[in-house]
Length: 141
Image 1 (cartoon, rainbow, N blue to C red):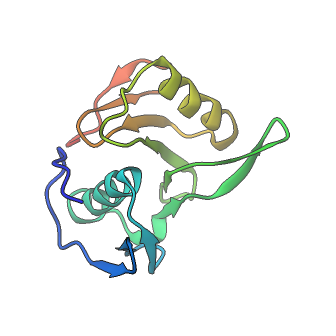
Image 2: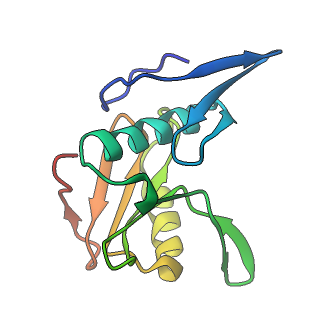
């Protein structure tokens, strides 16, 4: 998969098994099926670790939680030094528009997670919202 994203390229580890391509996740330390959304998620993870200097132990990926009796799964949550959610990041495939539906999904998830910041990204563009749901910057994103 060679979809150009806004994030810097990194040393991607890929392998092919039969017809499927897998990408190695350095946080979970396992091989995952490479989908367009996973491509974005891995680029964001790499950016957080290499450029923002976030420890892998502060990053939680694809954890299941309960939202009004329905099982949901967030993409990325980064915890601060007090182990409180600092940002929840909803990743979409590069061809998915960052529209109201995507934002509402992330905000619904954040009702449970209670992160200070909410980010939605498709790897081509992203939006970050503060606790008042106002667009903010997450430097150097």
